[in-house]
Image 1 (cartoon, rainbow, N blue to C red):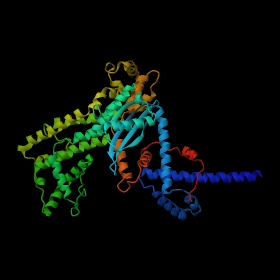
Image 2 (spheres, helix red, strand yellow; image 1 turned 30 degrees about the vertical axis):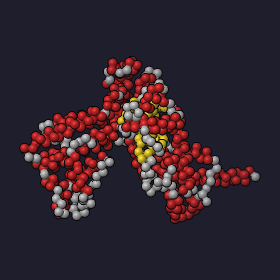
Image 3 (cartoon, rainbow, N blue to C red; image 1 turned 60 degrees about the vertical axis):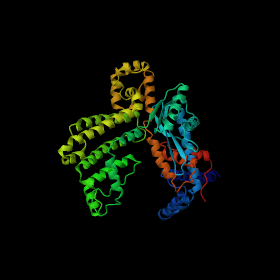
Image 4 (tube, rainbow, N blue to C red; image 1 turned 180 degrees about the horizontal axis):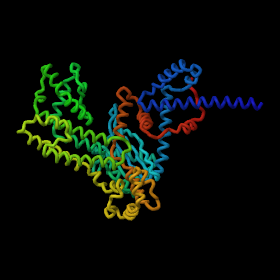
Length: 517
């Protein structure tokens, strides 16, 4: 009798385990569908593939794979469950944040609906940093600063976040976001102040860099290159090392450098090709124009290198600011060297400058120095947001090099204690900034730790928003415009998070697991 009961229990346990595994597999496939931007209906096709492989590789397991539910409706429900679990995890983490910041960006989707992305970056007492999608809000009416503020307020309050803990608002620089009085960022900062906190407004450092880059006044060169590239469908008749010339998109700054570099590398082949087609480009025989082209190729290369350094998720503000300051120092070096036409850091210009007529050397030198000077001035003017908090950034990143008399009085005594401790100085050199501040004794350095958490929570750019807009355009393309805003938000939450869905909690909340028929 006991043996029979035990056997029945084992059968029930085995059956439940199989059902649990098939349900878990269904969730995992749904997660992959969301992460890779595939249609919900692809679940059926994936299941057919799995069954076919199983029939060949392990026929005895076919029924188990047939029991994995991957219909369109099931995939939708699975993604809803995954998103809900991730949101719950984020809410739990948010309760423990000592400080947080938000990054906001607004753009239109394939159906011309304005979508607002709000990302959250928070730091807890253990210096654990969480960066995730707070919410995606559809702005179906107007998109004024007040409208955006209402959407942001709703998202912040739904997550249970406290306004006084908000210490930074980073935006793309649109007027509705950054207006001095009616911009969303200003109104959020005012709301934080009313709650007893203090927040800073920041304009995305990548967007600022791109705006600076656009001030480079060599438009005649770029226009000629773009015009030429657009009349060459391909160079199939030319055996060139670098392949076809790239097309240029004015929207994406990085494409400019790629097009210029490819065009410059292929200038001889392009010249020959156009002559054969009866459409010669006389500029390709003009050493003065080629000199301008070479200078622009080199300068955009430097700008693109900076742009790439500024990209990436979870970058600390001090690191972004360091890249920017280094670039400004480089510009001052270029300015000095080009005054004597030293093109050491301009390889394309160095290659071609010997062809410039001596009578034109002085004018070219002055022209290029003027471009660098204007660019440097633009950088200095545009990065006021970061200059305002430069002392705070230095205190966070290099506390042992800061003069105690130059910091807030509340931090001075703790800073002096830190600077006089040789063991802490060694730790600062060995550990990452988050690990260093986490290792500080909270009883001795509570305010220095507090300052570090504020700095760690700041967004330096809206890069994460821009990346998510790319995902949005992929998920909600003109071929998939029927996707609802709620489903789109759920898919984006699953595909952008670094949190791991808690499968045990999800399965437990669902109770009995049902297999597919």
